Length: 258
Image (cartoon, rainbow, N blue to C red):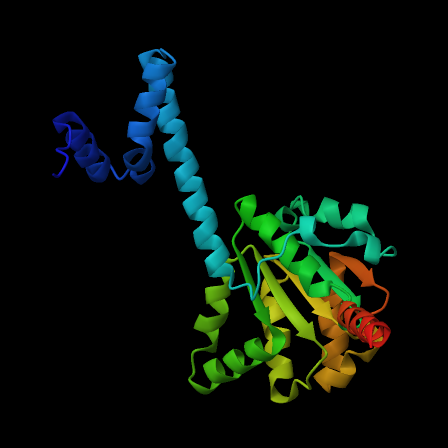
């Protein structure tokens, strides 16, 4: 036998739908029972309802912005093993995660060999920024170059570049793994468009002196570095690759068990 819904509850659901209060619509019955159980005043009940709606909206915004950021995998500072990277300036990283560098339109450049945690830290700072209300976008350099070249060939480069203005922070991952070729001047233009307008986090396996190897134009490289480092925080990643370390440990364990 189907349970009949209380007419008043049905009316509340209708009002919630019309007023676009999905959080309250989901939780008002639970809150009502709690209010009766603890003999709360009507004002306390109303405050609890509004708080739950606000919490629901904040969670929805967070979920939407995390999806919009397009992280390949969500990482946080809580899951980063700082003990495995003793030379990493932990205090600096934690301070940057507070987001002041974004408000000041500054950049972060993470430099170190592959597998030392650059992408994890960059992503974690990005996630922290989203939690603080900033709009963030993650993209690998190779993918960005392809999109820039396509936009240029379709005569919509200005519109494409403008579409990135909505992001407070853009994370450019893996600079240095491929030669940029014809994309070099486009990447320069992309970064120049954000100069003192929005923040960048760049992860790279190359020291600044070797950037010319992937850009193929020393004058352009110098000009880009001048803009990127003008207001920048450099984070060096020194140490052995996590992936190599894990692989070596597995090999050693396997050797011991055989």
